[in-house]
Image 1 (cartoon, one colour):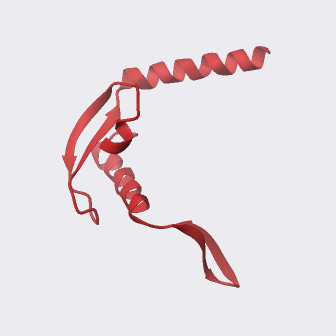
Image 2 (cartoon, one colour):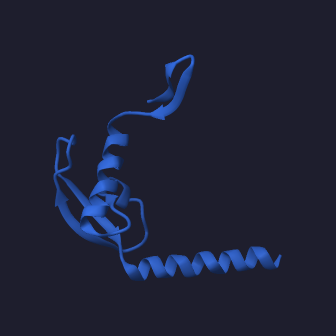
Length: 93
């Protein structure tokens, strides 16, 4: 759910709900595991890159244990290389 929350004198646009809670917990888990990106199993299903399985973790406020993944260093380097090539192509046009 998203929208303005607060009083007329101080409204904040925000997003709330289970998905937001899960993302917040995944972000925290990334720090605990020392990786820059943690990806849920559900999101990982849609990615073409080979991923590194980090196992199942119990996340606070999330009922079921979550299988999580991260992107390998090689995949990050490959993605960055592709992005730079695309930037260079756009810049040369």
